[in-house]
Amino acid sequence: MEEQDPRFKIANREAIIGVILAIINFIWWYGFAYGLGSKPVEEYTYVFGLPAWFFYSAVVGFLVMLVLVIVVVKTVFVDVSLEDEEEKGDMR
Figure 1 (cartoon, rainbow, N blue to C red):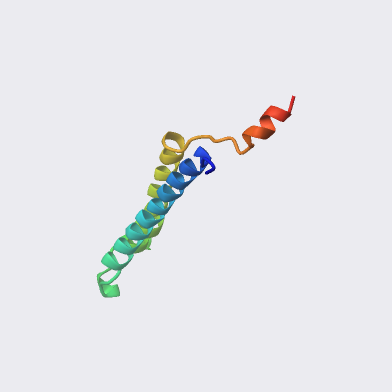
Figure 2 (tube, rainbow, N blue to C red):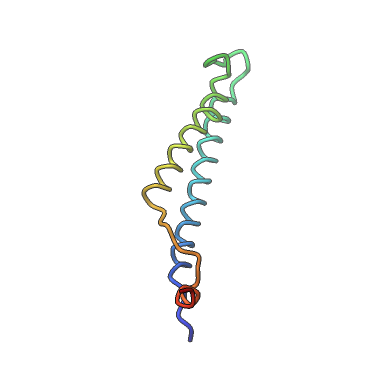
């Protein structure tokens, strides 16, 4: 039986982290968009001229996700060579 390349384990872990970040983004967006946006329009509050539900779900949500992705990429993700080990030995 052939041994599995350890890069697959790293790729799977990082893919799962990416899916978790996407789920966090959706929960953030949905929570603010439907939580604050479900009131009658007359009761909306505004931030920088935008309805608060939109500002917090889209603008602040984007900034939060931007910071989260940068932190995850710099601290959790690892650099992996995409070259085959066999090809490395043949190149001199």
